Length: 533
Image (cartoon, rainbow, N blue to C red; front, side, top):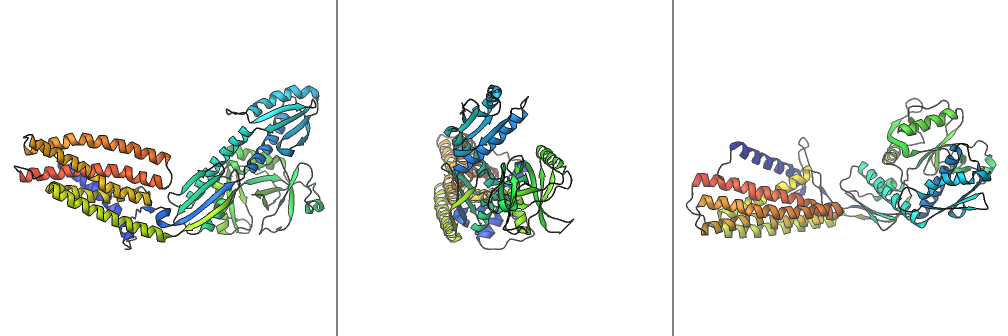
């Protein structure tokens, strides 16, 4: 009990002082005192309810998911029939009424075509994604099932949520709240961001990048009337481009999607105009496709399409190998950087429309912080008075441990870059009330040992030993509850869980380990004959 080697004392004080030092920048910030720029400044980030910020609600259209599935199925069917040995020729392809239908030119290929399509129809999941039927002997009709569509919508929304999270992380914000609401909505809350337009611009861009061959057979007069040749579609040029206000016809199938991008950075076109551009890099598979496309279509134009608008339609002068390319489109540095962020984080699988937006001002948060600090001070004073009146010197040790506990808790949260929310302040107040529980258990146990006739040192040693078991058991159960809250909760609930879990460790460290060191030092120095508990 009395054996506390010097190295252990130094280690305990070093840990304590480091944690307290980490809390100082946050304390200075709350007191509106400027922290020296030359010193490290770990800070506790404030959540939306304390610092204010932007709140938007995004909604997706399930019909777009259905249309995309139909297009993907058409391209998959064409590819499978083309790769069949021998090749199965099909025609009269139609995607009207949300169904894919086509005719097999030779009736002898019907059974073989059916076998090829069965894996596609059944899918890889537990639900049947498409219904397949053959009508008029040679016409195949593929109809999407409701279960398959529901699964596709769920997957699209999950992917969209992750893309939204990546884009917001690129802004350098701390602990945004991004959660699904219902089947087709996503709630986004970003603390500290007072400009919702910046958030809308970032999240409203689908960033669906496509490279498609230009249909040179299309007549300009037909394009002006919106008439595209069979197998092609018309896209307008983006605003700010040299051909703004006009459109171009491109091949509908056979292009390259931007989902194989691995990197995108804003840079400058140093070889030509020195204007801002976006440099992109494909993965190995995408690079091979891009090289194949450019090799087979030298001296032909191909369109770079972003979210349904053509950025440019350069001519393929030579094969482009290596998987690197540039996107030009009358960018500014800011717009090129925003596009690079969107491309790096991936394209949204479905367009997201802002259906609700609001800005939360920091005034409410400042009032909450003020009232939270008042509650903490009142609670702390009440606990201190009670502990000192009840346990004397041991109550003073418990009070000192309580103060260090709060400072260490704040410091560790700052080092971990965690976010403090309004429920987190409640967690602070709760920690203050619960932090002295361990000291109450220890002191009451020491009282019992003295009543049983044990000597001072034996009573203190047994008191710490026996009480520690109950303390550890209680904190383990609280730790499990806190971890579960963090895993399954979101936003403010996770903020409360963070304070709770960190507070468990700091409470045990200060209330048990540090007070034991202080009591041991006092006992060795004073050698008291009795304890006034």
